[in-house]
Image (tube, rainbow, N blue to C red; front, side):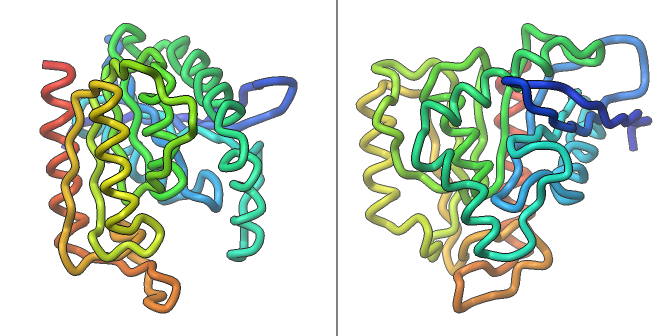
Length: 238
């Protein structure tokens, strides 16, 4: 286990207050930066734990905040309302993401010239939109992300893309997967898709257990997807 330091900090984007959680190797040298994009409920302990796990791998990881300080959805209806403005207006989402990236690159723990983004569920969509809008990141990883295109995908996607997907995810159907592949291919992206059989949405979340809604934890897919992410980040920052 690597010695890890953590801190939470407030920041402002577009006149609104946000709070991020940063975890990094304990020391004075900066490390490659990995942004962790949250699921539809907002930044929670789940994303903080992922940032800590990334720090243990040697990265300066920041669980970012897209909704506002202390804004968390407590029901499906509240969570849906939180993501709706961003799903409906992907340019708004992409601007918010790039503003977050700029703030996080300024942190002393971050090696600003080396950056990536990962995300879960809605955060997976965010990670993909970092790439689609050619944000200044080397690559992105989407865990059980929403896949639908924003309508403004760059003609040529520069960041490398890894999508980690449950084949039985009702929120990203095989038709959605096919369309995603066609979108990435048209944009000449360096892209990968890993699909896990018998696996639904939210497969990395140990408390996900709602088969009727389509969210079920899958320990094997959780482990395999994290291992794939590690290989991908190693490739980005070798």
